Length: 167
Ligand SMILES: [Ca+2]
Ligand SMILES: [Ca+2]
Image (cartoon, rainbow, N blue to C red; front, side, top):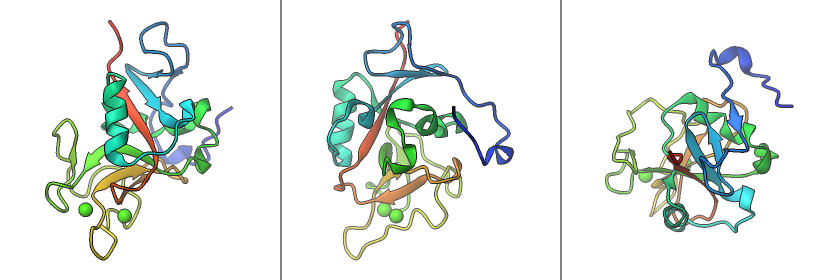
């Protein structure tokens, strides 16, 4: 049973999560709407830095998740294999400003519009004295519209992969 205390704030339909993807996604992947997702926590994998996380997704035939719709923000709450989602810690997604500080670009080369997206209030803040923070992760605390934050790419976290279903 999934409860959404904040539901009135989010006038979207709760997306349908298909745990049995009927062969459309590979083993360990979940089907949400029309996309397959793999969360490292569901496979009990050790934490990895951003680059290693991306490499793992590539090995699995996908890449780090590109979050471009609100439904994807619900995934950590819907996926029973990564509960309790509020204790899952940070999860890498495919968003970085490593090439130009403050210019956030997804791994599919789509630029994240400044002031848009699902950043936690006060993020991204490039916190830190020297290296700053150039990779984005999400953590679901309360509000699905405020889950992203920037962190040092060398930090080790869970990660979320995404790929197209088999046809
Ligand atoms: Ca940065
Ligand atoms: Ca930050």
